[in-house]
Image 1 (tube, rainbow, N blue to C red):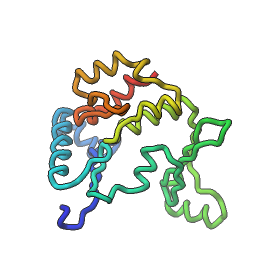
Image 2 (image 1 turned 90 degrees about the vertical axis):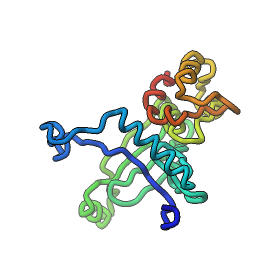
Image 3 (image 1 turned 180 degrees about the horizontal axis):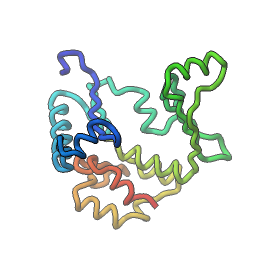
Image 4 (image 1 turned 45 degrees about the vertical axis):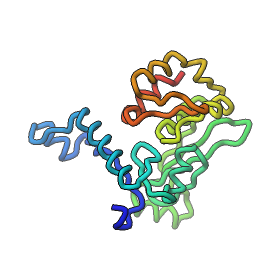
Length: 208
């Protein structure tokens, strides 16, 4: 792949959406959905296969050659401000002190409607959500655990007042015994490959 000029690979699982032709064929028994164990094996194979070919995994589904990790992805995983343009684009902006939350909003999905609203001088926003401080802290934990760099525990305590080493010491020890997290070094909490497969479940165990 690298020899063919492919610098970046996104390896997402297929989501079976209700009401689609695929979901109906599975419901009728015409097709068999891939089992959870098989999906895990496929993802572990993908991680090893791409790593052997020079691709660095920087988050659960993102792999890139040296120097080709997208800047916008780095911004997303670090909860930096993002202004996105185009249909379906999602933006994020932190509020200014004394407010301590953030705003997420998404543009309309229909291209014709998007262009019409732009032409009319309107903001083509379809939905807007305010994230309070607690939700922002939870998103920070979840997003950083998705990355190979991991969660900086000192930063978490400094910015959100959450000391996982004190509050969740038993859970952290249990997660390490289960092979889901790497032994903590230099204040960084990182998931193993096995842990990355169940990142959402690990995150729930660490939230207040």
